[in-house]
Image (cartoon, rainbow, N blue to C red; front, side, top):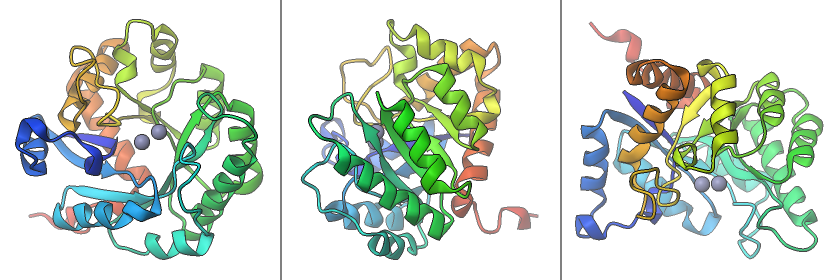
Length: 266
Ligand SMILES: [Zn+2]
Ligand SMILES: [Zn+2]
């Protein structure tokens, strides 16, 4: 049982499936993927994301406005909190800071990030954080604005081990994407080796970043298996163990996604 902890199901290229999402999900289910978290990246597409989560019991959703979408409608704390009340919404994000692709004065990114942190604090939901080239500001804003009361995940992690460790100390998980399979990603492989499996998640970030051997094609949730297999190789353990532990990690963090009556089975 595997979880794709970060994918954009409303953005998948469904050409191979005649435009239908269900076979793409079935392909993932056939490869032991049991849960998917469909990430909101702007408020104008939130209805589509929510509809997916309502239609598919294996899919949950998050609400946020991406740090690279300068022209997206700016969210207020109140609006995020309102969407977050939806029973299928289990997290705030994706949010964060991207100084790698962002250009010019990026104070708007920091302001938007702070709005999301406040929404996470007030809703008690975890944050899904996108962070690139913005180590110090990401960590310090989480400390100052989070006030010790927020947790979450640094998704599609590509930064250094020191940042990962500081985030882990604050209670955050580190999510590993298909980048870990790329030839030039040796620093990320070191991060995976150094962190306990109990602090890791796996994700596809589909439709982007397809792992080797699918690199260059459109990514889809079933390829989270290739990500987990690479993590298993790096940790010197079985794929089954990576699947089990990262799934436990997922439900511990995104507790609102937990099956309500899991313990009531006979
Ligand atoms: Zn991202
Ligand atoms: Zn994303």
